[in-house]
Length: 464
Image (cartoon, rainbow, N blue to C red; front, side, top):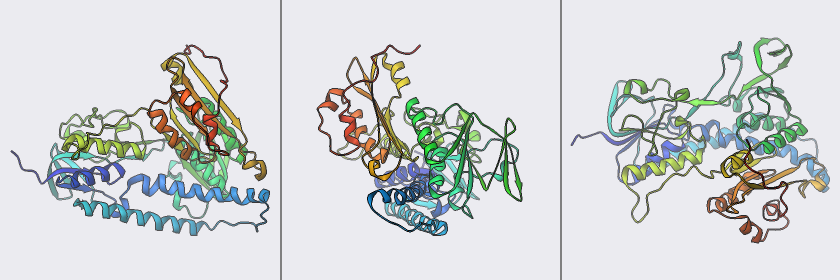
């Protein structure tokens, strides 16, 4: 039997790569992990330039709303002022702490860490500069990277990788894109005090989400001050003494301090030698894998955003655990873990937040035929005194044949926190009768999900 330097060599120190490396090492495997960003890159996009810093900045933006809303509750406050430099420094310190936590998890499990760029030499060999190491299994977990289209002047634009450390604070920000990253940063910087314009070439933002949710959040963002312009595209960007002049297709223009392109992410596979090793790639370079995350080369696996399935950190973590069980067998006394992509909940940290799990209305009609829709649109109790005009949307989709709740959607405060609990119920197959028999917690927003009794539409056949 051939002897290898390592049982598993992981390329990429993001959430999925770290989880797979750590779990495999804890099972007694000889594991190495290469992260080109070194310790500062551990945690990947999520920790460094994604979920964590984005949520921290979202919290910061919510304080501006809270200061204003406090007047309705009897508080008199001096005019608040954002110290952008302090926010950036505090965020950077927390991210550095998290990088250190990831390092401790890896070293504590016995993983050998290489702070270098890695690429494949062949099906069992990883090249690190002038050195090479052999491995029985190789895992590619290099995530994704922002994609900016070839528009004239694109060198003047930034991506979500750079937005956190802009200097100075962009008083006028143009956001290009209509996905969750674009909508989140439009909301965040609007809340932090920037004048935000958001351009999207489509008819409505957040393609893939429930249509009512899409329209509702677009209206709420507009009420909050975001200048959302649909079916609009950038023709060119030019730097002038007054700022960045953005010329739009059709002749209009806008002068801003920064242009953020949030037009999607593509798998991070450049310069890894995948093609030479025979690894099959799909759209935008995504690594093609089977149900067990195995690529076209039997010894090479991939998971997380680099496969372009569901680009969510918890999904990458779940895939990592399933892969380790597949390669090494389950832990003693445990069943082998499997990764299911049904009823995966997600949140969008716009202002207000979006939380969703299960099918959209259009998907449910196509999948189940006859469904019943329950919908509630109301002003939350808090805003009866706050003076805010923000509203909340809640929506349930029920399969008529089984009475099972197959879709649950919310736009409102802490929607992600609310929907996480209901995701367990949908995953378990809860019916509308179970929802109806559950006592709500009063007064909360969440109780509305177990209090909706009257459908807003008659059961209908699948759309044609």
